[in-house]
Image 1 (tube, rainbow, N blue to C red):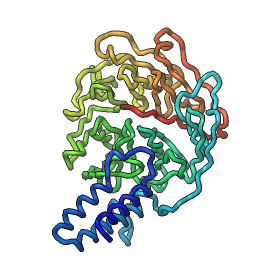
Image 2: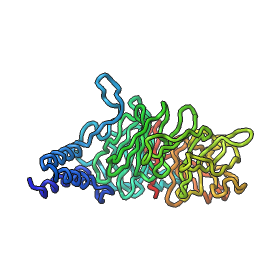
Image 3: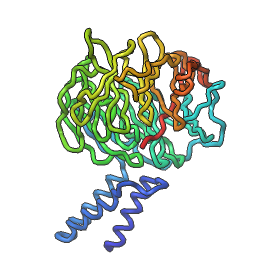
Image 4: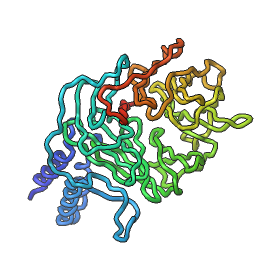
Length: 403
């Protein structure tokens, strides 16, 4: 086989394995070929062997990390689909109207039961997926990432391809999983270590790792920095995963982190004031979450639920009286406008829409839409049941992509 024939065969293998409609941000085929060519100039036979190994690894799509969990040394976390990859018939997809929720119009994708409904009127069957807790769109029409709730087997992360193929397992058996708001990075805990990797077309790339104390888990990202929560409300720390194989110093006064503003600062909650009480704060991830500004207004819940709008102005968070509060972060610490009541309390993920509103699911499983302009004018959001939700089940709002 000539070099040109080998190159075409290897690239064809990658194309069939990834099957994405847009060019990959990284070119794993080109990387493998460049490495093989360098070795091939010294020893042609070795170069061919390396190319063959690369082809086998990508074709199988399975790799394993983590410490032994049994006598046979089987790792706990599986990267890739543990069932192996094989061509499957396309799942049911059809043009349908998204589920309605009375006067609350779902402006984002929704997961109801075993179906993913897009706000564009498509429906995808989530074959093999269950107990979804969080869902995130992937940028550039790259599909969806779904994270399961905690089970006896740990957490699972699925990638739903945008071309109609069935969902694929990206991680299985992880202690914790965090997906960046831009859908391009993933962090997880396995045994005594935490890991971080880039995400391209359902593949984890450039994985890094660091030792972590027992119970410390990744909960989000601030740029390329991983936010790590300590166990037993012991504070937070950061991990600069691209440049350091060690976690940063613990900040015990940081109680929660909610999201990242466009200026890179993290909106969080700290213990401050006299006497000490939960206050909102801007935290600098470049300085181990050093406090930049605080605001100690009304009583805030310490459950960690909440999120920051894409423009960084608004924070939707729980108050201390079983209700949500809308906070104008532009006036934090300046004695400006006070947080306003914003309808039913948060019970899970908050997803901000491109029109500037927020959607979440309340304790009854109904959908709540919060529009900052209306709340600032004194109007109260209300909840509305979602059609098609089985008794005891809850819909999942899919977070949109962010820059």
